Length: 540
Image 1 (tube, one colour):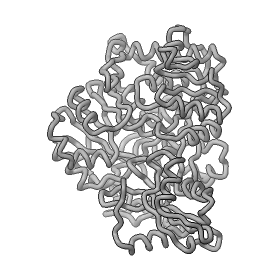
Image 2 (tube, helix red, strand yellow; image 1 turned 120 degrees about the vertical axis):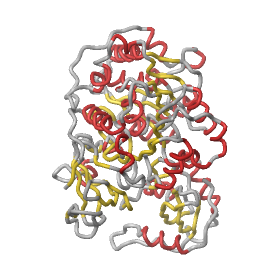
Image 3 (cartoon, helix red, strand yellow; image 1 turned 90 degrees about the vertical axis):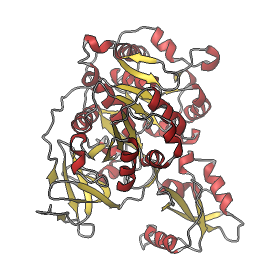
Image 4 (spheres, helix red, strand yellow; image 1 turned 60 degrees about the vertical axis):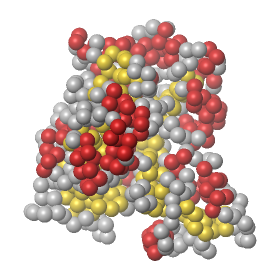
């Protein structure tokens, strides 16, 4: 077993609201907390807390409390912070929904989580209404965040209504160890499952990340990574607000807009995923903007190539860091510390964060691998234990037991090595998840969808690397009898039913899907078959 070389940090037994905002000083009240990157509109810390309290008060008046689950279907806008923290302030729980999801996908998450309210924005309203209807949520419980205009709100309450009610936040005792935030993840495999995180989990991970990332009140943090994803939620939204930084929101990624906001708002700290690193390193558009304010770039959500990271650092004249984690870890378990970045290889994920224990297990025997006296260890599956480990999967005790061992160690499904001085490098993975532009794609979810096609007898999906290092879904399909079915038929069928990032990018028709005696798809055979085939052209 190995731990962090950094000392443990204090993790208070308190709510996230109290941890982030309980210590606001008089001077903090006028400090800018949130900036809408598109419009430039600013929200001070004082105004933000007032809006959070008013939202909590309105929700409590509607009967929302500890037994209520709310859905939040919203991109990165300042109102996300208001609703998210207002919900927790009211003692309720919240499930954050991917902004790219189809109505069917949103509806499944709402139904599975037991959500009885849904907050969204008017451009999402058509999907939101269909999803809410499928999940049994009445129109009066769909709150439109930008619905101040009655014509836009279309009969739904709006955030303007909520705030204008001016109701005080309820006085109640909230258990910080109860499930409070339920993002959805596929874990190491399978279809998306609700990850139960407590307020204590989130408080702990902010405290742990603080020690490594060193965001300061003078930092201007660009929030392009989605808040509905645990990376954006913890490392951007909560950490930045906890440090009294200025957080500039972007509802979706557009390179020119990303560069303009970074330049115009003099952003100092960029949290990104590897596809953005590729653009920062290579795209000619970068040279048209003044990015001299950027001091730190931190990449997460998918592996960052060391050479690519150094290219970003050289071009921007900044420090580049890499972090590692997963939704089930709230999410951070490892990172390259800002204060020690020059001594750690950029293609590693750095040190274990404070208050965390790890171990590596031999892939074949499950025996623990010892940390070497010098050099790097043999590779093994990385297991993590700490206060950031999830409570479990919502209504999935079997999946929880498979993920967390009796000693409290969570199986990450990633293969890692550790050096004598504690530097961890992810070298491979056991898990079947496909990572595309930082998003998780579960092959089992796509396979289940493909099998609903009347002309498909069997199917399997794997991730395949493209020339620009992206991993995209490839489907292997067995036709039903003599049915006529082409590549485009398969890809269009899937594209009409899933979020854009989940689309099948290539199809190969086969006679049979290789499977083990127990019926498990032998993906390694499909990967070997793909590796041996001529290079394909991919649409990414």
